[in-house]
Structures are given as C-alpha cells and as structure tokens.
Length: 181
Image (cartoon, rainbow, N blue to C red; front, side, top):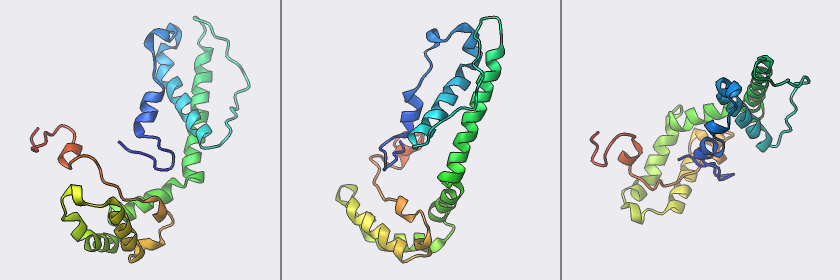
C-alpha cells in the first residue's frame, strides 16, 4: 500500500472510493460505464488539488434509449477531464521533475547517495527489526542526503524513510514466506 504522507490518502482510496454498481447503470450507458467512472475520478482529483473544474461543454445531451448523441458528449467530457489531469500533473505538479528525482534516488542515477546511505545506516540496519529506530534511520537518511550530490534535488524534502510492516518476501506477489510459489 502506498500512502501520501501529506494527505494520508492511500492508493486503495482511488480504487475503492468510486465503483460501478452494475444494477444501477442504465442499459444504454453500459458500454460507457468505465469511461464515465474514469472521467469522474479525473475530475475529482483535479478538484481535490484545489483547482476549479469548468467543463467547456455547453450543449446538454438529450438522453434517450434510441439516440446515441450522448456518446459524443461522454467522449468529449472524458477528453476534457483527461487533458486537464494531464496538464495538472505535467505543469503544476511537475511530473517530469519528480520522475527525474525518483531516478536520482531509487534508480541510482547518482550513486554517491546510495553509498552514503548504506555507509551511514549500516550499523542500524544490522539490528533485529524490533531494535531498529525509525527516527534514527530518518536522521541517517537526512545526513546521507546532505553529504551527497542528491542534496541539490528540489524534491529531496518529499522523500522520507519508513519501515514497512512486512518482509521483503511478503512484498512479492505470489510467493510464500519461504520464497516458493
């Protein structure tokens, strides 16, 4: 599970908050139900980021079980929401800059950070998990960051150090705790 430390929202939040209840979907909308759901999710993300959503859609569809004009409105609204969300991620949230930051920290773009981290955390990480102090690890993480070239990363303050309540083997889907499938 991934948790946004600023909002407390988990990745499961977006999967479970809005769902389709098949018996409540009119038959003439069945083939569009997933597009309508995604459109609503996209618009909700935009609203929750503090932006006002104003649809350019002026024409209101006239719904009928025989006329398919609503299909065009659904598609245009989806395209609008998708474009707005994309622009939010790319422009306001600087997705490319954040991905470069992830590359720097986790894909070892600049190897001096990981060397500093391993060197500073070695003794703490040798301990039994019950004896490891998360605050100590966070402090060592910060020191490693300050002593490496990654200290210049503009998103460095968004990276935190946490301990997961599961083993490495428990994080791999389909494996038993003994490492067998």
